[in-house]
Image (cartoon, rainbow, N blue to C red; front, side, top):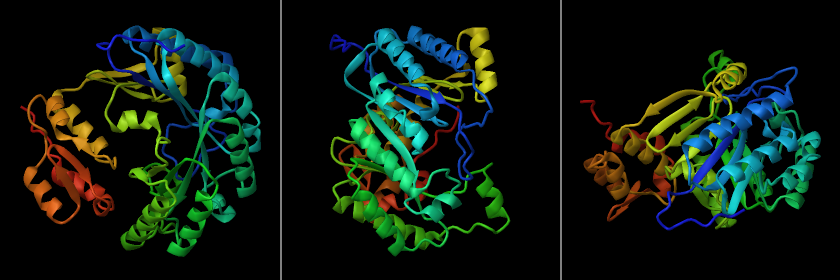
Length: 390
């Protein structure tokens, strides 16, 4: 059901639904994912619907432009639960025309067998965690699938869903530019309109952190990682899937509309364990541990743990940090409006970095150049002026 709204109606929302369960924990993963011997599917479906209903009551008159099922491994959700959530979401908010409904999936044969049912439930875009097209790399990454099984799942997804994306992880120990170039060329030939390409990082609390601390895991150094990044940009651009965000590449029109909501600093709602949201000038966060979230929903009708007001300077800074990840850049006038006066940027630093070819500034429009994208983590602290508390 597409709902027509008055031109002065509040802008559309994005909805994130977190399913926290996985069959196993990958050694690089710091997401809110958990392994459980059994899951009470009926209880979880009812709790998610209750959490959804709570957010709907706080956002009347808004439509949904996108829904994203993340995790964890949401392709382990029963399709009937996905269908129930989508039906409730449409009933509570209404859907904007052409709504994007994405579900993250592992490329196992068991989960691929559910793809047709998930599409019938309303999912129209799938994001597959292929992670590598090399069996040895998949074993290193702790993945349960092999290359053949992953490619078979991708073929099924491309038949079933209107839009398909998949993830690859690169900058693995010992990975050369030539090997990555061959792998990425193969991936680009598979015909999807979107790729998420992430350099391997060692995150706190993961098994890889333990391995790195013991000297058993050594990632490519800065120069090698930069060469891999530049190769990625060049190959995807030549294939017609240029970067539109630091790690995301798409054909024109195939960008993830849901993730663009985050990066453009628009309102989004989050339900399920550990889910974050931005509702107006409020930052929301649900209880992280599945059992704690489930108990909170039973007790309160929702899983909210934190609902913090965001002052204008904080909102402006968040918008800066998110928006500069995008190739399109940001509008400093909008940032200033969020800040309630002046954009929290260091103009002298912008001028200096612009002189080095790392930033481009046209009027109020600021963006990071291709050369600057390689140094984004160093650029952001230079130009973002964190406000001093009064």
